[in-house]
Amino acid sequence: MNVLHYISNFFENDANWSGYAGIPTRLWEHVQYSLEALGLAVLIGLPIGLVTGHYGRGGNALAFVATAARALPTFGLLVLTTMIIGFGMLPVMIPLVVLAVPPILVTTYEAMRTVDPAPVDAARGMGMGEAEILFRVELPVALALILSGMRSAAIQIVSTATIAAYVGLGGLGRFIIDGLYQHDYEKVVGGATLVALMALATLGLFWAVARFAVSPGVRRNA
Image (tube, rainbow, N blue to C red; front, side, top):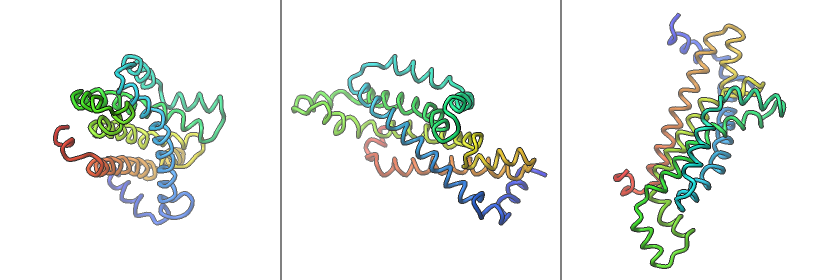
């Protein structure tokens, strides 16, 4: 039985579309986990990246922190936090946020450093304050690259949020974990397919956001 047959059987099975363990419920749980982790990662990584990039300081420290965070095994961190904190959402959020902060942090810093200094100097000459320069001059130019960092973080979160199922929570990982336990490979392949489709949908969403939020001139020069 090939993979396409597994996928077809999984999605054609009406039992997979209803109840607390159905696709809509598990998909919504996965979206909630992903949005929460991405929101926390943006709250941490974006302000630090904007400020350090604006002033041009701390680049080496950010690179070190990002490299160290990327080196941490996500599943190992999940096990460790669960042993220390116990079961619940927090042990899941910690590894997901640790995974997502580095691309947001580093990409935001680099985006700010690539802004042409000429308009920044002109803005200072006109008497603009540092915050005004950051948000009115630098951020619009750097936005395309910043969104690319958020996109990378979001895709990593969507792909990794399946770990929630290991600690008894929901999400699309339930299909994979339960399917392996039950030797139901239709469920395993179907769950993996849903995760892949959600990652592709995330790509499309960020593409649409970039088309709407980034000015055409910046997109042409990117």
